[in-house]
Length: 83
Image (cartoon, rainbow, N blue to C red; front, side, top):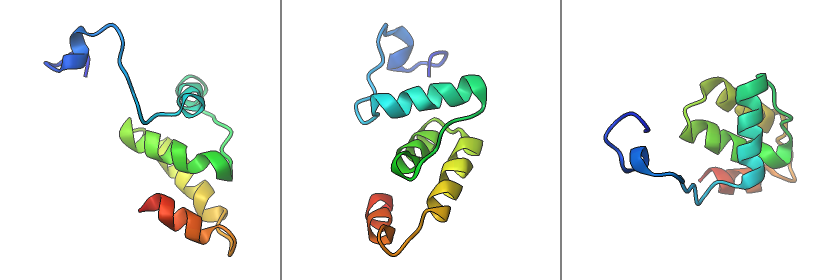
């Protein structure tokens, strides 16, 4: 992105409009520490960002958290979020 001929190469600020600040902080935490506090509440956001930024191990961790969090109460919500 910053080394190829893309518009972001010459910009001082890169806007990520669909990225929540708290989720981005968790991504940075993971990149620096190789750990992140995944919860049912943040695992979908983290999964989507890990996919966007191509962080495969974090994507797998978030996916496993979601799979282990399935319950009769939240499965429909998870399905809607995934669509």
